[in-house]
Length: 256
Image (cartoon, rainbow, N blue to C red; front, top):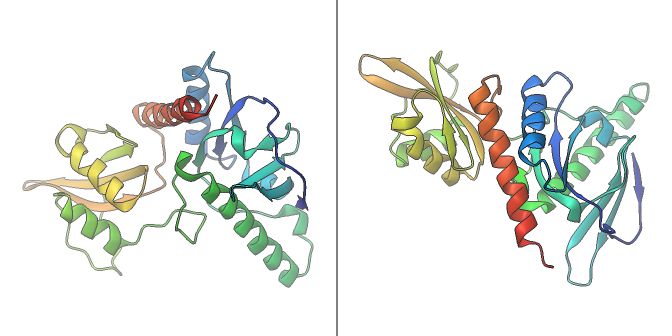
């Protein structure tokens, strides 16, 4: 990981949608392919970036005269990317490996990992609302959603929530509602989609999977995940459309 210091400037480079995902994340790869199709001809590129490559990038941070932070990084095998080029980001990072420190002393390896974590978190947080999930005000890179937070928000928004202790493992589910921005998918989306969107917005998340257990008395919410598997084609399409909408909105809002 190299940190440089230089003046920002995108130089008329194309806009970019970033999909930050591990090599094993087949759902993210499908989303990236779908976004490419949706943005075909829009002058926006879609990059799939492995988390380990972020530690091998050359980074530079600057602050402009208006107090706005800008980041420029050069990923292995990629042209330079300036923060002003970023139109949307899907953050699927589960951990940040630092393979170049694999043989280092454990203290050095831990320090490098913490440094990279802070660097990437700062970069994504500065990107604001074009990141899925938004990271403003959150002290972690990998989205976390404690039981008490989602359960109370869901109840306020009218969702039926299963009674569960914080130390109890979530019950099995047999139906889901995926929220991607204002889009919803799933067998229960027609009945519970509006309340799920309201809950996600209340929690400050753009992408959530609501997991329900159906029974004689109706469906009850047993779990909420900010990291859906994205194995269903309908879910993949919804997330891709959410990212494409973000990218096009940012493009329209840019000053001439």
